[in-house]
Image (cartoon, rainbow, N blue to C red):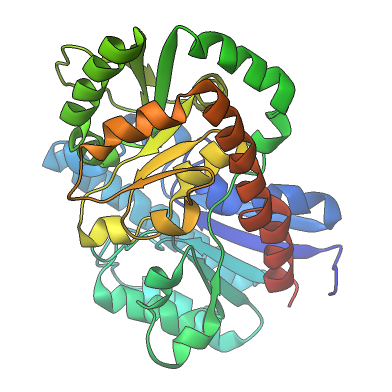
Length: 373
């Protein structure tokens, strides 16, 4: 594996390090900067605008058009620079720009590809066509022009067809920061003290995933009633998201916490059970289970819907999978995992599963191989 002290990477990402892109792209490139790699990040929008206006579709059409033009101009200028200066590698996260890219976006990418001096790595962790982030036409072009395609699991790999399938590497999203903070005895001592009086669930996600949480909120409210009746404990749900959960619950205590990386870490280190509900749809089947993987990395037992990649993350040693047509099992799972002696075992196993299946070191090594190939 060669290491060039002047190795240049040009990374096209949606946002800065305080966005979900961090876990797919930034964290690996930052770690490798000490090994002679130099990265220039091209964000679709400046950080202030990204955090103010994303998701863009929620705003007035005039704002949408203005933001699209800004993204378009920034992307064209970045591609022109790369076409002239030819970095060693271009990394694209999810898409190069919003759907239906205009002239000369694809012409520039094709030119860079045909020069043969820059390799292109394309990474996506959702079914971006079903989500409307990318057209089928653009998806095909990105597949053709990329030298490596990185996805989170087999379902997404199956979306890449023909000879392009040979370019695919499967790398589940993991967290290179949180596991350093998990000191099992110290963290779990605090968790067990609070588990004596109440059970805290944590749900961490972006606002586009709120419908998945809403699909089980009534059942969680009933679970809170049952937990209090049988064990005299309160059930609390921490919703750590860029938008609040708006739902009236009679028994479940809902705490809305505006997402920051620090608040998400604090919430997961203090909670007892991490949850990831889904519904049975194509978008859910494309999900990469990242939040479940984050929960495992800090020894947090998990409950998730048995849809898509969730069943590759959770097993019976570290949590519970809930069939989508049996929502009443959420109550049973919460009560089982919250038993103090059982919880200790599940918590220990959760970290062991993360270390064996979703290790950051393994992912970092895979990125090094692709970058320096």
